[in-house]
Length: 254
Image (cartoon, rainbow, N blue to C red; front, top):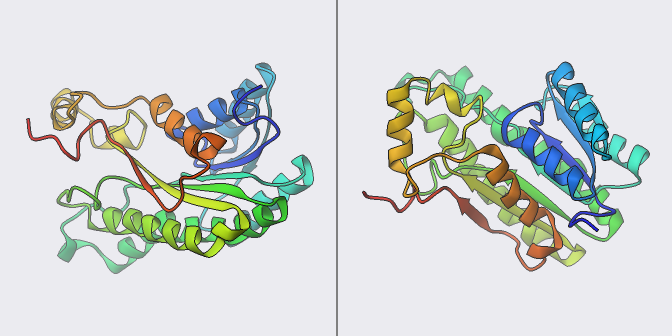
């Protein structure tokens, strides 16, 4: 029996990186998964891979900024798999990157829409479905940026991701009595397509690696395992937390 046997999970941003790794891991642990992202081809390839290994998955493509997508993903989980137990709201973007005075208002709003408002829209429909099941686990992918470290040029990203921590805490307080847990996952540098936009040269990668106490960046599967902890009953008394999984970047001074 896997850690997520008889559970139904939604994973956003599942076409690559942490979301892709989490979808495969959750399915291998017994969850039936609904995966979503904008790129249908990549999602279908993911579903095929999960099914090839004996898992159950279905893809719903769309933009996480679209409220109708948030609704339809939950409806798909309920209609196809019988309910919803886990939501890994993982989709995100580095967004507008510039010193704060140089970030356009449109760039600021777009970054918050992708990283923060999309998570609110997801939770808006996920919570009632979980309440119908007697509880569940909501996970938001935040970051150490804006929580323990301020990186120049990342004001919009930091603000949007820090907002997820506050959102998780409020959901935890509002719905703990209904058995719903909400937590934020704060990865460090991770070898994903988004992460490689920052580590796009050998020099920049070496610099980012050096910031971490472990002197390396994470593989997506490592972050996915921490998401699995928050999704599973292993974290049954963990809610409203900001789980830092950052390879020591927050505390390193060496």
